[in-house]
Image (cartoon, rainbow, N blue to C red):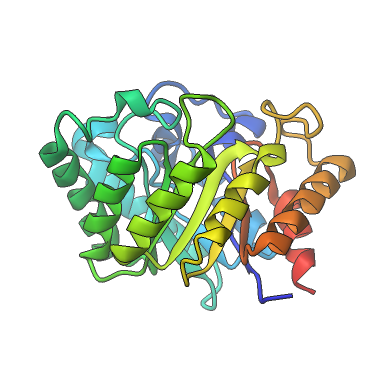
Length: 279
């Protein structure tokens, strides 16, 4: 088995699981100032579970989501993550779509590519200046916006990864679209390609499609546990749920994935179950 890299899991659904209400487009960003101690505990738990790459809570700290506080919240999220993980671990700065992760029709990439580039550029530059080890453009449903984001991220000089949101529904990216976007992203300088925020039971065809593209870079997945799959309950860290997720992740590894993590509904227990695949 190839050496595996283990990503951490979600902050947003972990806040919800720990009793912190999250509302509106600011989503988990508001918790940086209001519930920093809880976010700190989440990062510590993922580190203890064996994650080696930790994504700072910057998914919704862009200007469009939080206004004038965006730089302050972004810097605070990076600093918090850096302080709470080991020196041998890496911090990823999260760059999210400007609109909805499941609605590619809402992306401004087609109607206003210039503004789209400007907004992604300022976020990428701020994350780089705050000291991230890598930039993770994640949960992109629109291939054009994904490519705009990675182009801006690559220009910072930081290693850049892309993760696409996909799924079995017509409005989401198909395996063929994922593979095509992945190839263009690698040509633009991306150093790893993943899929995320898709039900764990639906993930394998997308990993297989990326693998068949022979991109020459590491590939991977971090999927959802729950809501999209009745077999893996949301916010359920029982042995059954983590064991089911681990078994599905093994199929991704068999298909060529070397980067594994968890998205919505997964927990530090899921991270630990993935880490066990490395031994």
